[in-house]
Image (cartoon, rainbow, N blue to C red):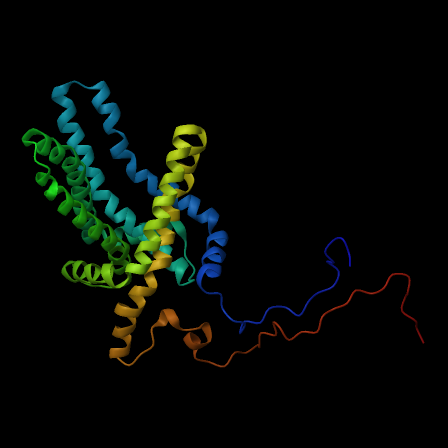
Length: 305
């Protein structure tokens, strides 16, 4: 056995009809192949957090009379733009999951423009719920403490339950937004149903999200330089990829596939390239059929008769 790999002989190649990867092996295969693109997508997505980040210098450097309206304006701009930006990122992630070619910048802004109205509404509502939950965690404990009655914490429990359901609905609503032409009403309706139908996948996604945020928190405390670098290049795109990979099969099964079955067609996302072309190929892919090429032994030339 040679110590180093033999690059002078070729194997039989890989057949295009070889079994496709599935599950965790497919996940890591796509993740590693698209890692550089994910870093670029993460930085592109972070640009839409600039209005929110500007809130801090505005509060610090402006007077009280100007700080409040400017702060509210910046938060409003962020709340409107973050939805379309999420739609743009989700569009690319879906293309990765179904293994279709995509141009990152072009398709990001195409998803941004094409879904702007609906995505802006969804993003605004998400931000409104997040701000309400933050306010609730501050207000309800104070009310319960003021009246010395823990039963007054019940509204906070209800609020948290609703927030968790809305959080899981977001796993599906963005994917359906860019993959279908459903109305806002049906997007909310279907995402609410899928939040319970896909509970197992939801819990896996939540587990990955919690683990990722925990690691980021540890880095923020102990290695700030690594934390800021990773925030710039990875977490949002990575988590979006995890959610899309985990939850899009649920949408295919319960939303997209039934639609194509109702019109007597096969979901194009599940078709192979040969099925899509529908023609006999001019050339045949011989991957997996070639004979291995052995290297010629050294010192033995070819004899000429």
